[in-house]
Length: 383
Ligand code: AMP
Image (cartoon, rainbow, N blue to C red):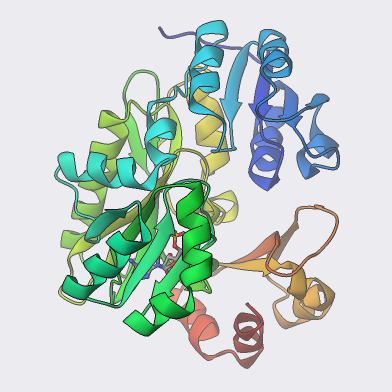
């Protein structure tokens, strides 16, 4: 069903963190009214919403009331209970759907689904008992990463295992995780580099792919995204095909972030999919003619997606809680950068508080800053 929503109608956003906030800002630019839902009363998105509801994500009555008060519903928060989400879909207009979300909520299901589509991932084994882990690691190669199947993000719920000694030393922690949920033991990928891409799909099934970004993580958290022409056309083409495959098979409406490992022999392994705007796509606010947030709003309101053009190469750097006292000083280091501070309140360690983006006509200038600037090195060491 293609339903075109005009300016003046109301978009309900479930989740009012920074992604919800930036979605709201895009929506308001286009003339929509925005209502938001989040359990945290000081959610940064609430500051830009026309109205909001404070209630838990598993509060069925509050969620049903919320979705019935808006013209279209979308979400930026991934961990809403699957059954509840299906109920919301039946009781409201949720063009974004639930298929990709339900798949991505479970790492194990996500990997199986990708493999069935012919998309490669790092090798993995399901782990339900501690003994299973010990037996598996006797025969399969270490190092590996033990991950929770649910509720993991930014490296949370992950334990790197280099040897059997690591398993013994982490036994208590591992047992605690196993008691809560199924785990996935994933072969450690000694990748050459990491990339990600944001794919958008509209209600007509048209797909647009944003420029690919090359990402650096520190302790599992995204540190930088660099965007420009640096990949071979063959690798770019392969990434586009995988993105289109996922968008079509997942019946995506809106945007989805896809993270890849590029191995030393240029093999592509998908690490993770996130059916919503993605941190590595924040550069699109300044560097492309249309942002990931704009495309998402266009898609869920029944409009055609825009063609995407990279205006200039870009470098995005995340700002975590521990960086906040340095932000003002860094403004003078990078006077041409655009700073986004999300206004999330308490700047705790490792909490994503903002990002800044530099654009430049020459990618090499940005590479120079990323790899050789001493002040950025200090920034990275604080991750
Ligand atoms: P994730 O939470 O799965 O997105 O992981 C966060 C980051 O941890 C990734 O972007 C990688 O930098 C690293 N990582 C996760 N899984 C692996 C793996 N199997 N091999 C190597 N690095 C990994």
